[in-house]
Image (cartoon, rainbow, N blue to C red):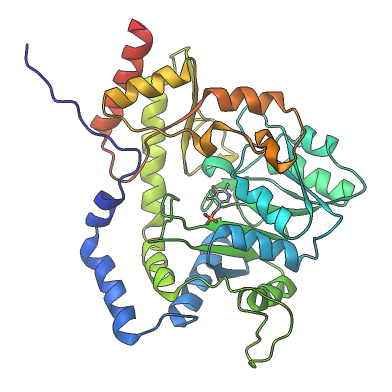
Length: 374
Ligand SMILES: *Cc1c(COP(=O)(O)O)cnc(C)c1O
C-alpha cells in the first residue's frame, strides 16, 4: 500500500493569500509610502466613497476597527446611560462591549434555526428602556429583516446592524448594513474583505449621523480645526484604506468563490445526518450569503475537531465556543437554550481563497470517515 502524506489544510492561510497577488499589493503599499500619505488622505476618502457605493449606502466612514465603529455609531445616535440595546447572543463580544462602553446595557437574546437573531426573542426582550436593537449579520448572512424591521417600527426601536461579517450579503436584494440608522463593517484580516491589520467602517444614510461620525472618529475636530465635541482617535489608516480599495475591485470574485466552496460542502455533506450545515447558497432566493464563515453543527463536535486536526485539517470554534450571555463575569443572567445548544455543536470548517476543491473534498472525506468508523 502506498503511504499518502497527510495534507496540511490550515483554517486561515494568510501568507498564501498574500502571495497570490504579492506584486500588486506591494505596489499599492510602495506608492503610499513614497508619498508619505498615512493619515486622512485621499485614498481613505476614495475608499469610503467606493465602499458606500458598493454597499448601496449614502455614506461610509473609515474607522480603526468595527468595534470602535459600533461604539461611535451608538454614541452618535444618542444611546447611553439608562438605555438598553438588544443583540443576538450568537455574536462576538464586541457587539456587547460597544454597548457597554457607551454606558448602555447590552441585552442578549436567543437565535433561530440559522444561528441568527430570532425576531420573537427580540420582541419579547423589549422594555420601556429599550432604545435600539443591533442584530448581527452573522457568518455572511443577513437576518430575516422583514419581521425585525416591522417590530422596530411598531415598538419604536432604533435599528443598528453589526454587519462586521456581512459585506456584500443581501436580504430581499437589499445589502446588509443599509437597513437601519447605521452599521459597522470589519476589515480584520480574517474577514472576507480583510486588510493587513485592524480596520473597519460605519455605514449610514443619515447626513447628521455622517457628520457626527466624522467628528467622533478624529478627536471631535471639524474640518476647520476646531473641536466641536469630545471624540476619540479611531481613524482608518490611509495605507489600509488603499489596500482595501484595491481589494474591493475583486470582491465579487472572492464572494463567488466562497459561495462555490459552500455549494461543494453542501453537495458532499448535505445528506450526513450527524451534521447540520448552514443554509445552502440556493436555498432561499431572498438571501444572498457571502459565507464569511462556514459554521456547521456536529454530533461529538470536540472529537470531530480533534480527528480533523490529526488529519491535517484546521477548524475553529467561533467565539471560543460560548454565546455572549454565557460570560457570566460580565453580569449576564439570561438562559438562552437554543444558542447554548448551538454553541456546544458549532464548528467552523475551512473556507478561504487558498483552499482548493480537492482540499474541500479531503475535508469532507475525513468527516465521513470519522462518522463511519467512530
Ligand atoms: C469581527 C467582528 C467584530 C469586530 O470587528 P473588529 O474590526 O475586529 O473590531 C464585531 N462583530 C462581529 C460579529 C465580528 O465578527
